[in-house]
Length: 229
Length: 245
Image (tube, chains in turn blue, red):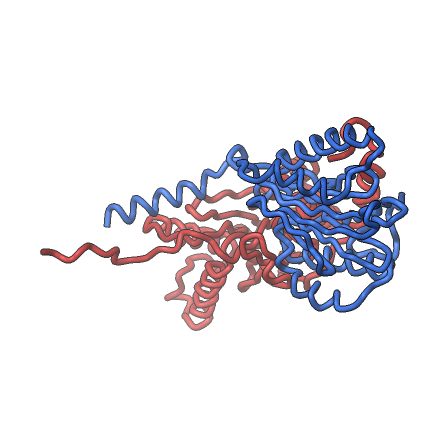
């Protein structure tokens, strides 16, 4: 009886005294990548959280590696940022020989950097392979498992489980670019509505044989693109 | 051989279905409360149109924390209110003519929450109580899960205590009009939506002024304007130095 109430006291105390130092900076996140007729679209929300606090409400979770590959980051902000910097440096050096890296090479290299390491990292790699002339979707899970996806979509991050059913239903046929953009933003909006760790803006990247374009949307306002580059 | 001891009573000490901040402010003619209408289940937004401000007689109670505990508290208060209507003045629990005011309710809640905490089975809530005090002046007070009471001109629970209180302290004046008080609360609720993972832009207001108690229907805040800064909308590589992590 005394042990039970001491235990209850311990739980009570811990719940009352959680501090910011014990909570890492996390990319709570929803990441979505879709194939469409002309290429691949990757989308991410823009919320970085420390526990229940939103430390950055306009974060950028999509990083370009080379001209044809986008790395979408979720998990620990620090770990994934370090990986993005390392990947950019490494593949920039490799491309000086005149041979740009393929998405598959980038994905395999990243797996080597994450498997077996004590890092909290979950990534989507999406892009266009200029040598084999096809779209690629890869993901690296928390444990370091590398998956090459042949299905039309991938989703990752804490908000992804909430929209898997929706994406299964919505990706039943091939889409053109504006349909794919609308679908990506809708999926992100649905996840952001229900997942407390996702929110803010929808940042998208469109990758085709011509290269990469980046767009930003307010989740409620697909008609008005905030920025096109 | 004696059988192994089994705990005779189980206590829930983890909140499951929770509401986030509630804000309150006293203005020239009364008290205004604001809260969003979101119920969270951990990090998931479980229900998005749930009122967390309730009127009981001439008092409005707002709760953050575990929703089931709030429902139980409302049940208890409604039973007390009913008891008052069926009791003669001589047998009433309240010695003043004003009967069940907000100040009385606040004191009663203090006793309720403190006694539950003393048994290691707290009502996992932070409550705001708004209405009139025993002298008929506007009243705003809070009671937390361990029975702490505070009476002040502006109070915020949960994340609001960190994010909204500095703004309320800066802008409060004793002669605030209702429109100014409402604008201030809405501004605070917008900031909470941006910076609290468990907040939503769908909010509800409640007013206790003169002799009326009004609880509004939920409505959405307009948050689009806060995303217009160029720095938010630029993509990677366009910002100097770090690329805008």
